[in-house]
Image (spheres, rainbow, N blue to C red):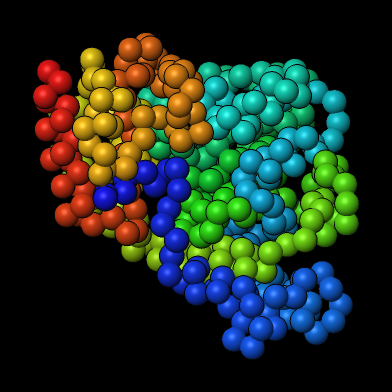
Length: 357
């Protein structure tokens, strides 16, 4: 099988796996302690969590704290539901469902429009009654990099906090400034089931989950040293390999654009993370293409919306009609994708697509 769905999840890095195994039980069976216990085993586990927190924090801007969560969705909910004060929430129209659905559930939601190239329009105004602005750094469906620095400035001018979903950016490109940043371990070759919310110093959130308040009083629940260690190891490797990984992705992107030259690109080619290739062929039956190319793992849209039968809200937001959105596919590649795999997948996809014509 050829895996080309890096926006949905990434293969576990060997370094992350090794770090996790050390905290499953340990060679002498003593590394399973609760990191919140005061005895020696608990302190050993707590030290592993602290090390992981430092490694995860190293990829964030200075001047903030890392709150471990079960994933980016929980981190986003903590940021949005825990945001103090009254007022509206302004979010880009192409946010992940974790942001959009939460914003609509909270009420008083204002959607920021996007241009045809997939970038949120930074010229539009933030409503005066806004308490929180949320714009992602890299879109999960089309890979377009958003003008988050500009929206952070606009949020400050409006007296609002700024939340950035950096799930697709963290560990790949430098994360830009914000008041709160949500990330997920399994998008950077770490384990599933853990993420983090970075909170800038001075930002006060209200806990949305009651209990022991283990994470700085904001998030309750016993942490898994194994998951934390895996996340920390993945973050450390991402930091060390950022330039190398980016160069590899750029080579894959250049070749992919040649291999799929007769497909239409969705979103900007320049303001984009080049590990995301979202393309379309008008009239393409994507369900049939997936059936014909079962050994190639790719997406018909974002993984979170697959199976819903609804056209991608991101592709609709950039001006595609329903038919065009439903004839689009997303190919995601990264650190462990070989050029040979990409070329083999392209041959199969192009052959199957041509047979539909």
